[in-house]
Amino acid sequence: RVDAAGKSMGDVSVGVSSTCVRGPVIAGHSESVFVRCREPLTADRVRAALAEAPGVTLIDEGYVPGKHPQPRDCAGTDDVFVGRIRNDVGCPGAVSMWIVADNLRKGAALNAVQIAERLV
Image: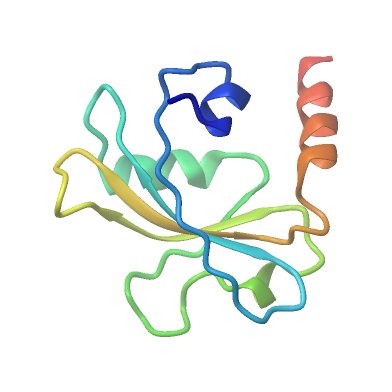
């Protein structure tokens, strides 16, 4: 099965298993993301890469209730907020994380503009 994520990334071999949970928020999308690549990942390696990534705000203080990215943190911003980065215990070499973004600001149109700006 070819899913939309694989098509949009230009690689139909990319498999995506997603779950959507709707909650009452003014603005924002939240995602629990599981990442497994050809080469093993570690939470430290992903954390270091995301700390340097433009457009990413890292809020990763371990598991402290209320100290992870929440929709209210990202409201009115263009950044994607990432936290709760951890090695996946069920799949060694994979990483899980929590991601939120303001869906009214960060989406297909802004992404297209930002990609175009980087290509120019």
